[in-house]
Image (cartoon, rainbow, N blue to C red):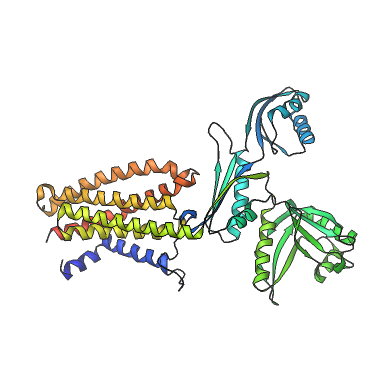
Length: 485
């Protein structure tokens, strides 16, 4: 093609859109935000398989029972709570969630004593409790900057209720992963009374809001939080009765997570003055200066914001991928992708024996992959399943371009413009139907919490949409310009 033909092609909105998206994708991958430390991978987010990291699988210590009773449901729940020393939640009129790992044999005497019987018994939690656990864990890991940490609820075959939760943390070692998500997270505030003894003030459920770490004018980091009215009153009464208002340095405010101290400090002078006048709903906990102060503030924010999990969980499985092995996988995947692209190019050249047709095909396919990576950079980690989706997009993309080329070169002759558009429209119709089929087939996998398949489905769907809406129309315009010459 001469320069005039190229200029006309670039002016066409289909080709211009592809070029614009390619440039935008490259900017998103490598220049947003700019960093001299980025290599070829740029801003792409890699999953556990390619970056290394850890995964944990935890089991809910809870059961769900369907019941029938001739007596009072309230009395049944009260008897269960008293006998088991556990929370019992009524899911609906026929089901109870017992937040403790207890066998059916141990439950039946309690139900019988309450004029009730067990209809069905299943391990797990209600969907509401499972979603609450997932949200709390998500807040914990995201607050530490672990973007797109995978948290999936798992329901065994034949069960109606989630029994496990699986967390995948790319770039995190096993000890840190267990530290973040393996604890129950029961948050409590106590006040020092005499010596090292403390007394209970309130639990985390009395905290209504938590601010982000902020630095004062003197460089001290801190986290602000607010109480309910009842919590503010309980805090004031404890501060007055313990002597923390009269002698703050001898009566520290102590915060605990799972009975381990995470914060301890005396009341500030301004807070003491306010507490003498009445309850105070908004407080700020100072954690120190510098990077260590900021790190402590971020950790305290997680404790304050997450609170306790509604149900106990036990770690029943774990694993890790070393960072060095992840880098090896990453290199292997890059070589496999490059070989796939080269192999496709060789096969297509063997079919047409014309570089003027092969090169635009490969360029269009490469542009599609770049655009796909540019979009995935914001919404999807690249693990082995997602990379498999990318390679699948390479194959199906070339296949569709071959359909277009073969259709417009029917009987080996270059058609007139009118006939070209008819043949191109027929080829595009075939491609659109095939793309719709792939979209419908992949959609359930993309919507399900199947961590090993979801990435593959999302990448495949994105590749299909980009191909039909962007790159196929552009290739049709390019191949028309080539064949006319």
